[in-house]
Length: 392
Image (tube, rainbow, N blue to C red; front, side, top):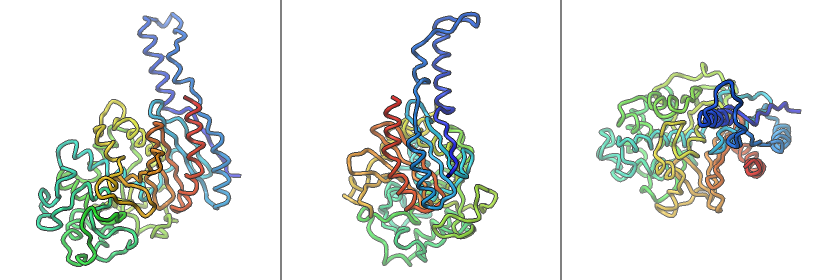
């Protein structure tokens, strides 16, 4: 049987309870010689989140699929991280490559720059970026982040020749973006913006280059300012590993076992699929989205910008639809079944999701393939929701 470690009352929840108790003590004027009040305010810390129904589901799935392990971290907008469950080889400190679960993280950096007035999500990029002038005059950052720019997408042509630089760690991101933006070799294949959903591809590399150009900062510096410093997510970073590690392609690299020293140093980090991070740190990013863009006391993203990231842009802009029948925002797949669920699944089986109506979410990490992640996540949606609902 796959081994399991479960911690359902974690740092954030315990910290919440401690702060509540401290506030009650201060308000009552108690000293260290007096007993603390039997305050109802400790109620938040008393909530129990029982995720025991999750364990047999994951264990059976891992056994059937022949996988080495998995991680699941559950977040509540009020209580914080309320559940951590690790199976097999996984633990809280395991750094994983998350493939396309990078997209909402990348989009957040661009959205923050827009909040700061460094760029306009809806203004044509050619109007304010020098290397873009004179080409693709109508394409905006909002279109890039919703995979609606008209550039050739990752699917069905991941190895599209004119855009191959997006996978090369030896390239430089702004040079790669400028090459893709100006090449005549894709002229016959480009669609007008906001007419088709073309998932992923070099349009995300272009978005990252726009961020570097308008800010005058490297992607690593932008990550530090946007996430690492305000949210304390020190395990995160970006690489461009696709042609370098192990099995390559869209199979999880056999040579990578959380050893970030194996990742190539690059000035061309892969924007749509190059994030590496541990489970707790990714969960902190989900919490930021649930908390209207706040990490602790820091307003990282404006609330209306977070809402825009979660909104089905392709449906609003051109009545677009994805290949799976869902909508799409800025890096988020948006369900159209009334469930208020958004996801940002990756090729390696990682599935972060938020239930916006319920105010909770979860991060499921596998090191496998997208199909397996989707299958397991589908089995976990209901038991996770039931556990969170029962604790409230």
